[in-house]
Length: 143
Image 1 (cartoon, rainbow, N blue to C red):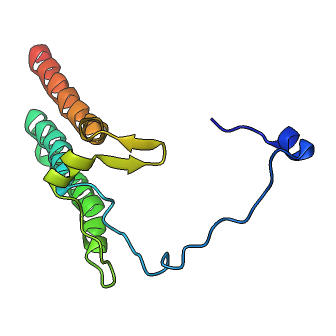
Image 2 (cartoon, one colour):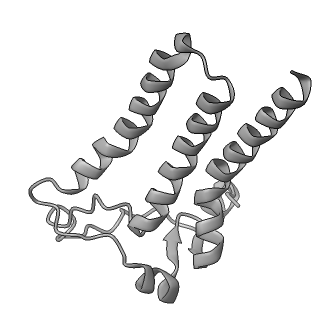
Image 3 (cartoon, one colour):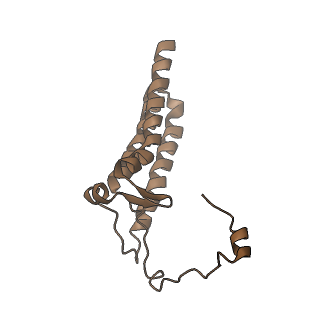
């Protein structure tokens, strides 16, 4: 939790210092987001699965263009960062699944276990697919 240090500063118990400077910070470029590719592929599959369920459930020639546009946005939303990670000067590589299972991942709030990180990444796409299946089921029952 954040805490105001006004009283500690006034009493002399705390002091303000300059942030340490890392001489190698400019040389280290990490564009990999430090997650294994399988998590990204699972996320893409979930989003495209939702679009697929909606397209099959509400099959209509009028909806072809919007569904293709939605799928294009999803592909572009993950494709551009994938290209970004392959730019010149990016020395880092994404973790392999084995490394991810062994080490987990460090977040701003601390170390996150691999299972917890995978759940956090994949929960929205899985819920979207479940929502699409529920909508398809309701549409089938109603019609």
